[in-house]
Length: 445
Image 1 (cartoon, rainbow, N blue to C red):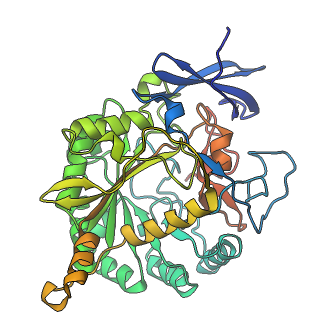
Image 2: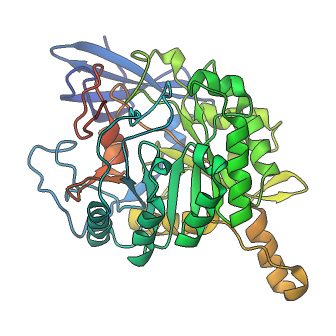
């Protein structure tokens, strides 16, 4: 087969996880990845389906240098993660997995979490992980993840450890069940210093939750948002978007988020990726690409949100994500960001990382409600902007079929390991067709 390569890169075989040469090429309006393994054959996967060509989305960055690499470069990317000196971006968000247990058994789960009897890391171990992050990445943003972090009764103590070490923004990645059922737990998390909730939120229809999560969950998630409102914790809605299940709900999710401001600070879409717990190896028809999510946002909001208001990231690789910032005026979103007709010029990756950390810490946290009569005219304007800010974003995590090692080297979301290493998120979670992982140790009951 003769290909007209668009971009040469490196990838992995989805069967043996050996490193392969790969090419991204255009076919009509779509972009695909082609790679060949001498043992397991040829693989092709759709990467980009859009009226906007992928090349127009790409931004060039001047790499950042890891100041305190933990691992030596021996085997080459992606087999020396830690971070190594070949990595090209600092940590914006460090994930700490506080448990591998979960109170759901979702159809899709990157962590393949179960209600297992495995031991949770101790508070001493978690303090070591916090301190290791500080040494390598400084005071970056922290996300406490799992499993389901709220199955731990001592999650409040874990938040306090992070706050005591000076981390300015701590978020919990949660399905929201306990937060909706236990208001006292929410209050205690706020008092400990929790900034934000990253709330699994796949739609406003319980039929969606029954397909993806195994049970009706909308009411308990709505109550979790209400409890966060009562105690001043910001919420980001996080839908996993799966073809034939909830693609048509994208607009409804956005409208629901707007109705719940200023508690809900935005929506962060995650197109389904196939690692961890998956039903079967993916077909192209079972994928939704990043630009398709953006186009659905525009269409399903009746073009209240326009494509030009959503931009490539300044931090991670341009093919990883999009973001748009808005102000809510009379229930509508008015754009703050605007994308130029083409992306040109070079940006400093380190500068992008600093801006991304500051934006998340500021915009995904709850904004204090202040009585307007106590404010000057200028402060009233600033208060209105803070409380009416709303973000739309999305991140396309990679799996063994579509992984691009150029994106891995630019990753800014890193998972902390019990040894104190920092592994790029997609590489930490990536699994082959049989569920084998390079870095994650899957624990089962």
